[in-house]
Length: 113
Image (tube, rainbow, N blue to C red; front, side):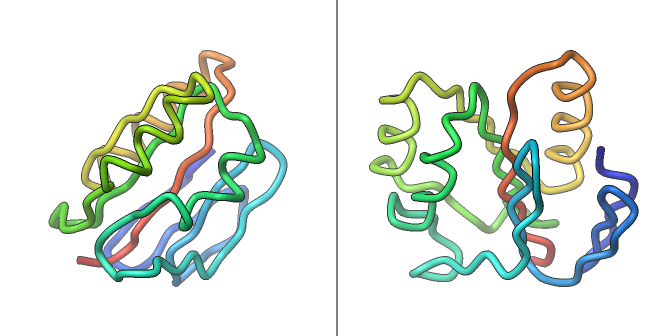
């Protein structure tokens, strides 16, 4: 579960992270870097695809500046994944709710802007 989010900082599973990250059911990968900064393309989510999530929650930053390109969303929907894109604070709440419901969720979170 995500325990705390503030601009540029997120605490999950007792560990604090300061860079964008992806939360998988079994691990956290810090340093998620996108090919084009504030755009998420299919290439940026290859590891997510391999995890075969039921739902992908995209945290678009505190101000919602990150956008998922249609190709990336289509790729995820192609494996049957639902995509939820929200400002990161909301995305953290959504992630926690879905995990609490026992859903297979991956969260890709931009921690700043």
